[in-house]
Length: 220
Length: 315
Image: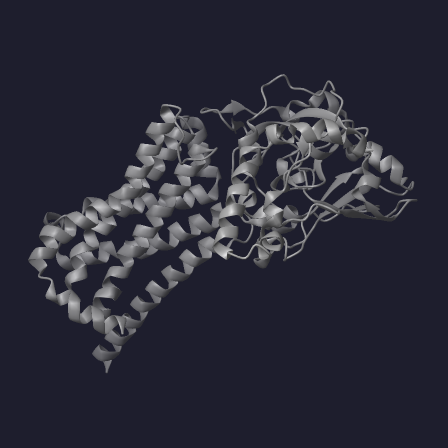
């Protein structure tokens, strides 16, 4: 039901309108969590009642981490969604979603380095080396940097579509590392990180299937 | 015995009702309105309206001299996974717990085993006020004004046998009262343990109250352990069983991740934890971080018990 509804409505919005109105709207929506966080830190800074709870640093570390993973998974869901509704239009938003994942991971690290650790570089370096979940998370961040840098049309040209695509396959590894980071960070056997792991697995399985279909077609 | 004092505290009951309980009452009213059946309301919502009775206790010298963490933070920022893994989950869900009547099963190497009513185990006429530091393994800390009784006084009453070397504790594990048990975050029921000399140490405390009142459910009502020189998870909540044993008891977090949580789990800024550096801590309510003190600052009272032990190995 839902897919037929979507196939009928989505293509009826023109790509031009999506660019002109859809993109700013999606941009504003994806910015909302960051606005909420900044606003609440502003309130906390003025000793006003705020939504950050009794451990604001822990709250903002987790909040920014959660949104990074959500946008990362969302960016990975764009292609499957586009295939599902048989329309290339969702792809218009893929880069923006990916860059928002990068934006939130930058906030995540800022929250940890600044608000939580107060630029205690010695301790920070020890954390990156000693706490395996931080090593894993930091590696994922480093891998995301080149993807963010090469996200422009100019870089696609410079690298050539093939090489650019191959580079951006890194996002699968980044997703896996991100989810591992989340699972490791939680104490005991918790359900929430496993939900993220499940969603990531589904999105990866979709790719593996497509890949197998493609190779079959070629070899067959 | 409490009845004698009842008139005194009944008068002040309204004035000491904390905001949480006050808000819970609102929720009760809202809930009752939605249900629309006044007859249903008491059975469904009554426990949310738990009123924490004031407890009379004598002051003691146990006071770090630092201002206590706010009651709001102590009662709304909790790790009590039986009620959910989020810090706010226990305050939200712990109303399902029935803290009275409460009994504790005592077994193992004791001369007075049996099932004790809480009032028979804890002498509510001999309660003490003790202000302790609390240091969580997650590198945050609080100052908590507990009300309770020394663990040693209770253990002596149970008459441990000469072969007893450890004390094991167990938390209630009832799915009807504890929604968090539906998922195996840990191998329920939660268990903890101490060496007998640790348990007999002056500092080891059984709390029944907080901020001059009964323990809120999310803080481990009606009876919990407080061992302030160890990481918070050693201070087991809502105790339903105390066993004296001759072998080191299995403890929940140690079973879950033996490399991270040892049996001793003494607060120790020198011993690294795979997840958190233990050198510093965030005192809830403060922005920056403080240096963590060895044995959480209680070294003069507990240090002797670990003389000659390799605390890096026995973490």
